[in-house]
Length: 139
Image (tube, rainbow, N blue to C red):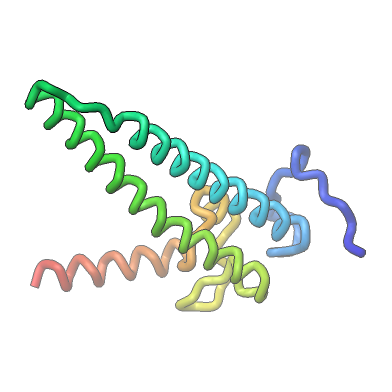
């Protein structure tokens, strides 16, 4: 049985082995919490949209309401895609590839992972990827 890790008093440290059990538990907790927050917000959005199904006699009010609804639904769609990335990161944690760059195999870096726990590329690889993308867009 593995040791219990107190994540409330834990902070990432470059001094410990990369992707040790404490770091894995930290990122697992962070990813699951993020996913749960997104799902809660999505439920609240659905409830608000159902409640707001009121008739707006004024065309301007109706148009404004439809615009708000459209923006909210686009935001939820982006978050749905984010959940897929979070699930993928959780799977990488299970299979032992989390935290390592998909391009180079090198550790991504704790600061980057803490800021963007779904990162799959090291900062350098991400910058190369974005430069290549920019070149192709400009053609």
